[in-house]
Image (cartoon, rainbow, N blue to C red; front, side):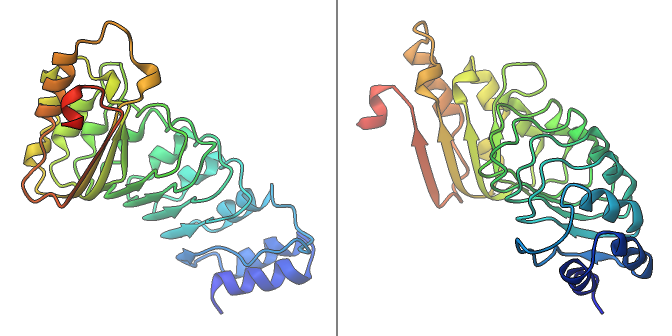
Length: 255
């Protein structure tokens, strides 16, 4: 029987003490794709992730999608075989630094995690990461060193920071990006050289590009010519199929 089927049966009919025994029975399972939850389950949701992760050490795919999860235990870093992790639509607010020990991780989905404001500072260590979806999160900026993730093929969103190491030029080294990318907080780009170093013109796999300036964050001293130059240097590859721009103040955007 599949791991999720066994656990769903246990959680629906037994107290939490039975979970440990079930996890022992399936401790070599490689895939755990969530539970069928309802309000009648006599189960401590807060302890569930800790118990599961402490027992299922051989997992390669793990999903807590839509699980009422507010935090992820540090023991996530012990799942060294993990390649796929989906935490979408949870209430998670932070991710433990131990997540960055998962050197085999290829896919990380955080869609709709609106309470998530930051990513771990050591994200750059996930060098095998190919797919990172942070759509619908509350991220204020990217962690430093995203340019190290050269295996990335899908990066749904990049939130430009002000510090060295999380500016827009970090995108320059990510030559294999394709599909869609949303670049947010472009008001943090201070000159056209940074924009040019993002090498958007060289990313022939990008089909949809969304650019956003946050008007409320603008300083009164912003030079319109600089803004114009920045937008020009973000010129995408000719393979692009869709381009949308929000918050760009220069009058030529309405021409």
